Image (cartoon, rainbow, N blue to C red; front, side, top):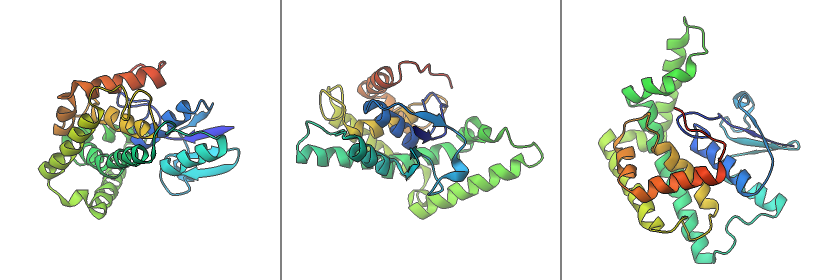
Length: 237
């Protein structure tokens, strides 16, 4: 039994978290059946989602989950790519995970209008008397995390400028190909697609989203991936 612990669908995406959506996609690319559990945050081995429970073996972090799937199930997500292409794919994967992800996090949690439109509502289940305090504490922790990582030390305009450079780089790499590296998706597509799906969510108004929408190829890539891996998913903010 394979169980994925993640957040679940929200914000026009199969999962509100790009790293979690990446793992959903990897599992589907591998053809593995799995169950989704959205109540596992308190049990997360590294204090973050996603993590995988594969017949009692716990694997945390989306990249280590990828490697676990490859090693245990004999899957090569980058089949058909040579060493140089595999290196290129890895660079774009990490552009999303170690750069664009934090810009996306900042745009949702620190921008006041976007916070009220999205993340603030994640705490609606908390009793009303303490709800504002819980929101303030979690938001403060995310702000501190962004500052420690480095993104939070920049102005919003500087963050946007850096992120847009990354988005333009992905669009240039994709070109007119259906997938990042060619005619077939690879592991990096799971990450790139999840990140772009999050960035393109219409609920959040950001220059980053505007930049992605200026590339019809990226919008089509988002739609193509949803149709391929999530045919049952009906976007609804």
